[in-house]
Image 1: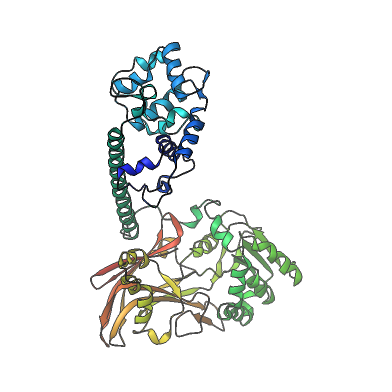
Image 2 (image 1 turned 90 degrees about the vertical axis):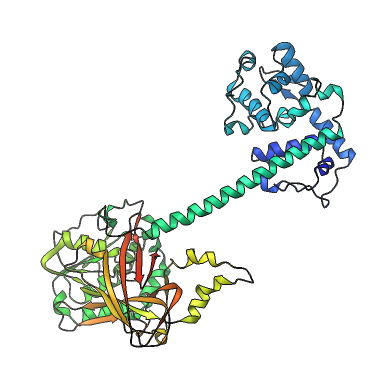
Length: 545
């Protein structure tokens, strides 16, 4: 609420008009606090005729007694009725407890909401008062005329009601408005301090979450421990057709799976195959065409209903059985399978944690001599020297239309960026930081710490680190197949994952940039990832979510 620069400006409004607007703002009615009009020269005058009509209209409102159901013609009549019939003088109560505007409003609402008797009201001690809670600022009756009456209007300096003694003097009005202005100013300052504290608390909480130490013992955030309703958003995202269209049109991805199966039919001949997260069923149909005796396709998302139609349209329903549900929750119609196929990879390989589900299926259903495909995966890092990208994403906040918004960097930098990186912006040789054997790895090993060394090839500024992965179909294959999601190869829908530095690092050609990477799941959302880099004397945690 804007404070008026001259308290006399309140004279433009009738006293009841101001009071009504305050009460309505407290009740969440016509106006919020921020919408209160600023009483300045630009406001339209309320002329005498409008004031007279408004006051006449309000004076004619019927008022419900505080202590019985009787309707009175005005506030003055209500006060007289309370004194004569219930033996309580509200003016005396206001004076006794030195009630200000808010105290008076709370008292009225307290009486109405608790059905307080007149004798109880007059017998109250000086403190504490039973209506001190902020709950009693909310009106019990909508547009209650008693709430639109100023307590100072009730109590004159000579102990009489102003309704009978005449109009309030100009000096008294000036003092009241000055006091109201001071209260408003103090409230605004308190609100500003509270908002500032809230902002600081938000930044502190973000820092605690993003920079929490890893490697401490505790509950592993396994996907299998998620309830179905907690995992609904993930599977719902795969119910949309566009994401499946994007994946099917990714030739590097889809043709690699196809080539692996079609070029190694001896692996599939008369075998039972499990497809975890089958989507449209494309991998299941590849397996059936490659010679599998039976294929069981599992998916929790709604796309499985289209997959059923697709399988029937291709006359493969005698070989492919589709089951809707999470692999962790369902029971397969067979005890063991010979092969598990799945396209489980997410951004930076491990985002979305679908590998958890594949490992669950492996441990529960895979035969001793069976195999998971793809069977080998690498995660690699390289140094990035893209000053234009850093300018666009990070340095941009230093000067935004002439304003310093650099505080935004604290929120922007921790967000890992998924995008296509130009190969000519790489300034180091790649380094493999983790290799995963899907037939041997255990769930806990999907969170790891690894030292790395990047051999710099250009003398320039290192603006970030880029991460990507390579996939191998290797075990038992007479014709091995692999593909890479690195910047040097044909782009895929996984693109690359970029971790931008807040401040670029100067590097020299031939030097070795040493660092450490920590990859861990978000315990509250095990499908998202925290990735922490220790680089020279800097430490920064990024999130993929």
